[in-house]
Amino acid sequence: MRRRAFVSLLGGAAAAWPLAARAQQPAMPVIGMLNPASAEGYAQILRKFREGLKEVGYVEGENVVFEYRWADNDVSRLPELAADLVRRRVALIAATGGPASALAAKAATSTIPILFTVGGDPVRLGLVASLGRPGANLTGSNFFILELGAKRLEALRELVPGMSRLAVLVDPSNAEVTAGNLRGVESAARTMGLQMRILEARNNREIDAAFATFAHERPDALFVSSGPLFASRPVQLVLLATRYGVPAIYPGPEHVHAGGLMSYGASRAEAYRQVGIYAGRILKGASPADLPVMQSTKFELCINLQAARVLGLDVPPTLLALADEVIE
Image 1 (cartoon, rainbow, N blue to C red):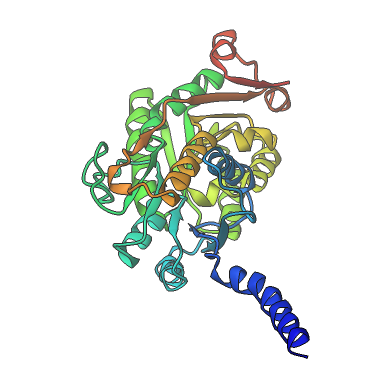
Image 2: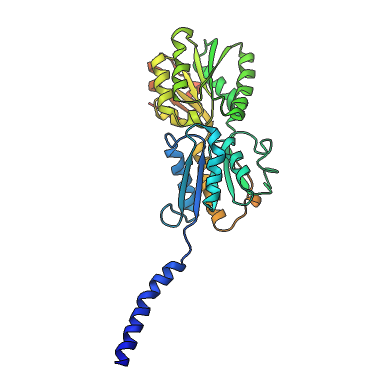
């Protein structure tokens, strides 16, 4: 009797050990993804973020979990979304999509590590003390979108040499990005002697309305500024540009892949991969204060020859020679 009781007790303890061991295993770290736009249009560059994480040994669903917070193009929601991630006690916040999400995350926590992707100067934005030594709980990637406005306009004029009237599409709800875009474009437009018409759009409906003005205003070309709203709406923008027959230049290759004419800018995909690598390093114990802000060195000119033919444009050989990607 005693032996059977002892064996029974031993068997019960053995069965309990795996449960106890599982209970003691630490939970997987959680990365909070904070973005002012929506999931639409971000699938490809988020894939690059995951690639960067994987390079450091982290795979979503296996040893790390993501919590997504999308503001759906309403930047006023970002502070509450950031606060929600802080309450969730995430291991770090990837505040992607420009300065609005980065500043919201910074205001929400001074202890949880924050990774940003911004097109402007993160020192001037107040995100870090310096590029080489960020100094607090933030670091990330600067991909120079705001500094490339003049170069993008030069490429557009080379493709549309007779243009005199330029439409510029901006998102006024993203004030810092819009101001940066306009600084470079307005100066270049004056130098080229272009008439410039600024069109504002904060959401899908306003994008449609901005393009509807082309029915009677007929600009020679369109400059689509950078920012999370337009980055997440490549199909809508390309379809509208095609409908109204206006040559357009976009900030990223995703628009050209969707059928758009041309794009020029720093590689956002590469910036997200680098930030993914930093995320993995932070999960392994690195401090954001000691991780220098990464600066893009890869810039891409993409041209869609089929779109050019539809618009009746001949792409100069000089421009083709500079292109990193040509879609036939």
